[in-house]
Length: 176
Image 1 (cartoon, rainbow, N blue to C red):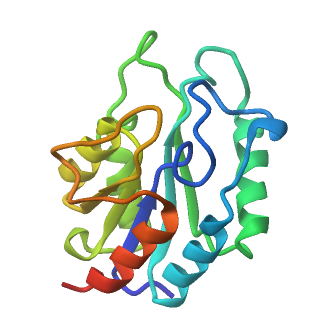
Image 2 (cartoon, rainbow, N blue to C red):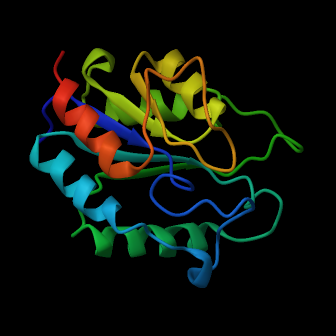
């Protein structure tokens, strides 16, 4: 099933619109039109797709794990269930430190292991410096999609204006 290559995907700001605060209500969870098409293209090219998202709002008591799972199902429905795994870190840095939470790389390393993917053939798409840092620690190539969080990063191998362009970069450079 897996081909040794994977795309690790941050959620907020990548798979759904960044709102500047915690996104956990269905009405705030907006999937850009280019995301489902890009996910399907990456899957068709043989990439495993793993969502790796910090969800510190759980630890803060703002929402539940079930809310995260419900929004994940919304993405799955939009992309014909092409995502392989959802990994999320429910801890918030105000309360506890975790190597799973980005900028730690444990969540990303777990995604690579679950999909039997090689870091040198894998990618991370994120919208924040902490995503880029975690991706670099995991040994994958990184793409930043600028949002309210970050507009540039010295740790990004590429900066793309949207998900469609990020997917095109991966498809073009995927095995180099």
